[in-house]
Image (cartoon, rainbow, N blue to C red; front, side, top):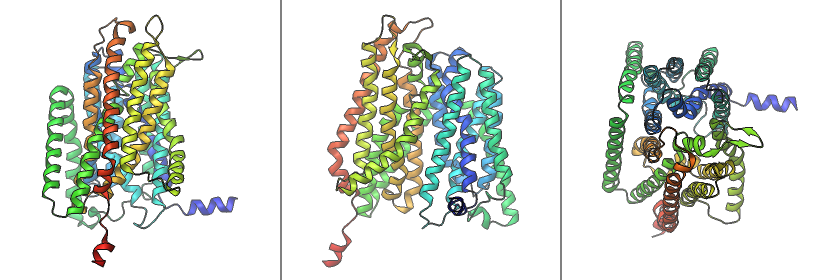
Length: 493
């Protein structure tokens, strides 16, 4: 047994095992902010729910939007390990600033944290993928383990955030997030040589060019902080700017698709645009979890199960558990279906994910209709909603990046990967818009806000189901667009 374990461990490329734990610790700070930012802003800083939701939307937009920029910097201006550690250091300073407990420190803290988290997430994926040859079939398993490490970090972060939330100990909460980020830095520095970059453009640079790029990269890191600080303080204008940029990117992709000369590739590009538009609906509802849904849970749901008080952040762990346990089970089920001749493919999965998301939101108005005399909704309805949403995520999230590799022409893969990331950031802003539609004046009761929530959740749920059903009708068309050309028939002719 020990010999078998030893052989398995020796087969892991150098650095891949370390990155599992680096991923886990580096996720803690983001998990804390993702699950607690709206509550901290409303409870401690007395922000209105609408403004807190908007700040959360801008937070998500920058976090996901900067991933593409980080992928460009890493390996070109700074090594991936340098950019990762530099980004983690900014996250440490950001969490420490937020722990100061004032609105001014919140904006500086978020600017520092977002610069770090936005740029260094891609570095981890790059460091991991560099450790495998292109034909190495162990890469998929390594990324699954890395994804598991991320979810372990989320579970710990959500759990600890809920623990401190129950006593409103926000300073201690952000100190915990700071320490988690410090541990990621310590681990990366301890295995510094093991995490060296492999085959990046920066390695081909001369010594002088290397240091010029290094200095430029540091200035970019430091320059982004005051820029984000300014934009975070003007969330309305920032939201409009990001939406305008997203519209420009969408228009550019349509123009690229129309002008593309290769007909089979053009068809697959149209399929990508249709599926991406559907995914925007999904992620806009999904991103309501840390804002609108969390405010609803705090004010309108009886957060208690078998006599145990449930912290709002613990609700996020429903998603984490479903993803960790449901992922392998769903993969095995799909394999069985495919062996029996059932064509489970990307269009089907996207359509099913939107229907599941819609059903998840439609469960909430039903819970509201069955609320108690004080308007408090039983926790089981929120639980059902999150389970359905998480099952939808399992269907759409893992296939998204793989879909781009299949549908995007080689010369457009970078642009289309970036636009896919931008969709998640844009969805955060739409989630903030939806979350702000229910006004919650100070002192309002669940009875007074339940009708507005029921209307909003019903409209969003029906909208998602409608888009999912539309994709069902489009499945034959999407399959024709995605299908590879029949080269054997062309050769025979």
